Length: 441
Image 1 (tube, rainbow, N blue to C red):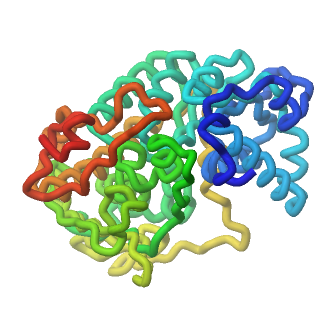
Image 2: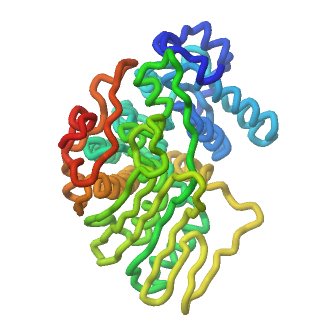
Image 3: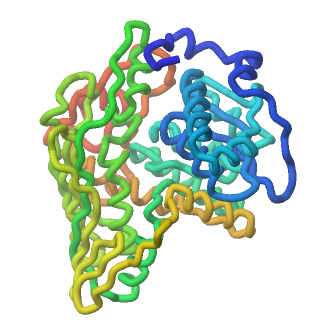
């Protein structure tokens, strides 16, 4: 079934057990101390990739529950994984042995996440929906006592960040593991290089540049039977309440590296940005380019640049300058301590390794918790976005404490306005959803 074939009625109806059983045949449950049972919330492209990655990461992994807003995404995910398994013997074996989802463990609708996180057959929850839903899903998973792997970013506004930081504290008290989809922190060349930087290989780091410049991304044409909500969620990249804009949703990876290298988050930012090529309403209301100057407590300045504009040249990566050299943290140091990472013939996939590390920590009884780190990187990106949206120099504390709430109340398949394109000098930091859609403060 294609995206275009799904009607509002299909979304609203609950998948019956019989229909779900046809899509996901019954399988025997396997229990035991060595088995980690995984539930997945959000089975789009990243959620489907995460299913493959977690199965390949460790022994004894079973996928036991799935949830998504729409039945067609569940069906497409299963078809894609079957196709991957047919062409990859190693994954095929893991898929055959580890897929234990039965019809009664497939959930759809806005409350699907509740069913997954409260399932007694789930130990670890993967959260891979659009980021706007992440704070609520994280809180629910931790409240249910589940370990979590969360995709980045973890919020799109200040209210969401404060919720996530509270969830982090709760997870610590419950000794729950939380891994994050900032895979560079599990990538061998970054780990080796940044360890050397922290040992002083280039002296004190005084400045740097981080980039994610690329062309455009996918867009799903609106269908006559889609509600406003359905159209926005199916094109979630282009709406700030769902994605946070591309500086938050995508460029957070490079911003996270800056925070990691400097071992701190910025104290203020000033920025520019706009919407120059992607002006058609099908692209929602987000910007297509940003440039931000972040100031860190040490005095270091990081220039952040990102764009999604067709016909432009790509550049994705990071560079930092110290008092005794410079570095590309993905594997190279220049200067008196010159060094280059020797890449193995078969490098480890960091998308797999991040799951390996989380699961190993849980099995060892010492679960890692990366939620605060990814929350701070997400807030750094929000700080940059809001500096550009408002045209004001903003501080970390201003944005952390702001009454900035981009999420619509009572989300359902309904009429939903598209906020105006942010206007520097007019858009103000403290705004509710109602004020956001009216372009007011």
